[in-house]
Amino acid sequence: MDANATLAKIWTLGGLHKEALRYAHLQGNDPVLPSSFAVGTAAQTSIAAAALAACELGHVRGQPRQSVDVDMVHAALECEGWFSVDGQTPDPWDPFSGLYACADGWVRVHANFAHHRDGALTLLGLSSKTARREDAQGVLRNWKALDFEQAAADRGLVMSALRSFSEWDVHPQALAVAAQPLLTLERIGDASPRALPKLHADQRPLTGLRVLDLTRIVAGPVAGRTLAALGADVMLVNAPHLPNISVIAESSRGKLSCHLDLRVYEHKRAMDLLLADTDIFVQGYRPGGMEALGYGAQTLAERRPGIVVVSLTAYGTQGPWAPRRGFDSLVQAATGFNLAEAQAAGSALPRALPMQILDHASGYLMAFGAAAAKVRQLQDGGSWHVRVSLAQTAHWLRSLGRVPSGFAAAAPDRQAYLENYPSGFGSLVAVRPAPQLARTPAHWSRPSVPPGTDAPQWPPR
Image (cartoon, rainbow, N blue to C red):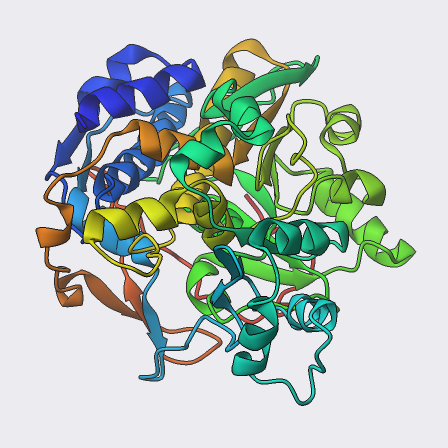
């Protein structure tokens, strides 16, 4: 669990100059939160990789390199995602979300979106108007866990059976994930280097970079929020008919936010005008979703040569589960973490990791990949596709090893790391950026605002 060695391995995947690693300074050691896994190291190194890659892009654009300091406690607390609005801390979970005992094991249900909740209840033969959680639990005791998982997947629903590590390791999807690197940067088209405006010494390293953010849950929004903190102009694109979750108030810091329904011709025209001056396109739609709308990575590379596309999936692009949808809590369950944590804690009940680290680390790795690919684009040309998946992040987290004394750690006091932010949702309190840049501090220059607040057009560079 050498954090510097872990960061160096991530850095290699970006193909960036090794000299930059000398400017990273990592403080602290696991455990920082109660867990048998190195969640602090995962948080710290993914955040450091994103910030350092942004600074390397600034260096390629003419800035001197600058040091990046990341404290492990601060990084872990940022990955908890805690926030309040007007003094209230929203409950992120629907009452039907969570663990259920089955005839032979456990399943975890994700019901935060109404259509997922209603679909799960329909599968169980229950009415969404009258059912209670205990009704769902009563029915699920008659199901085998893997049967329910498969029946749900056949209907496009999102839930997972809990597996042990030994059960996951022999699964065909686990074998496919293990054969892939943590993330990939692939050149997908020819293009000349697409220059960015020259930076002044006091500007944040991503100033002048334009990012379209087509994501809604945690990992993708974290990626866009990170790029915004490091200076990019980030436009969050929501469709008015799609639901969001309460965390949007925290994860939208620094972003513009517009409404576009890409099924509508006039809205697609507006998107195309945005795309014509976009440097990075970040998307977390279900597999095949962007292609169906005409905005797949290869099409984007043809229409906007030199673009960097960043794609997030649940289970990667290879293997039988590649088309399957998923969220952090479900990937934790399917890949063995819930049962492993329970065993380490001496608990009879499955236990989740102390935060949604797969989401948060994946988001920072997406930001790292975006900045690294843009460095490659400026140096070598081409259009680039960055791929990150929650399951590959889970495989990486496991590779960091276990923390024998992890559950002896007391949760740190987050108060010293909080800041007050004005927002379009109310008075927001949340954790400030963990990476400390020596010369150009990370910060958000725009408040978070509700979807559709802004017009679909870029501000001047």
